[in-house]
Length: 226
Image (cartoon, rainbow, N blue to C red):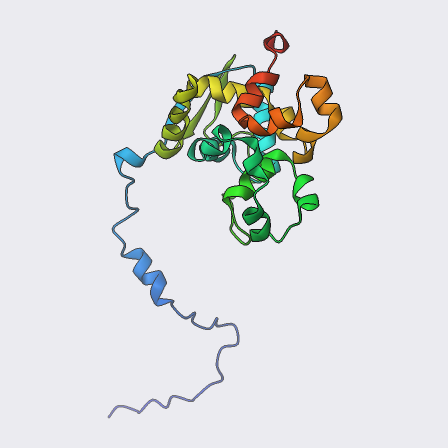
């Protein structure tokens, strides 16, 4: 005859870890087929621009002042090329100031590059995140001598090509912007200040009737590149 075994109820093991709850969404993530591939016609492609490295870095620093990666900044300029081709007077748009709840005096002290971003943006709208700790330009940027390269979206590149109506190729436009960083950093009101007008032998009426692209070309001095 077998002796019955008496099992005594003991105290729970204090070292035993409680079982963690499983999030159903985590299980769903494990069952995914994988990352959806980007269609070929929407993939970013590398483009090369010939310019000195210091100009390329200055352009990257300008993009950082408006919390954008350099690739996204260049794409923005291409996608919004009308801002560069229309008369500068459009930048003093009452509807835009009302959207941002600003008076002209507040608007005019903003850097021109910030004015361009706000002209197309709206309060509360997030810009493309700036990756901290990365290079001034982009994770995919490379530099070999005077040839700088970066990847751009098809939409951004197509926007740059629309500037052909000014007989300006994308590469020439990007070089012009890099050479005009000093201008884009100026407060908007500088364009109508007497000191600026006298220096460049222009009138306020001439400046406001010009496009920003025309002004950059007008103020660009090729000898500065030497």
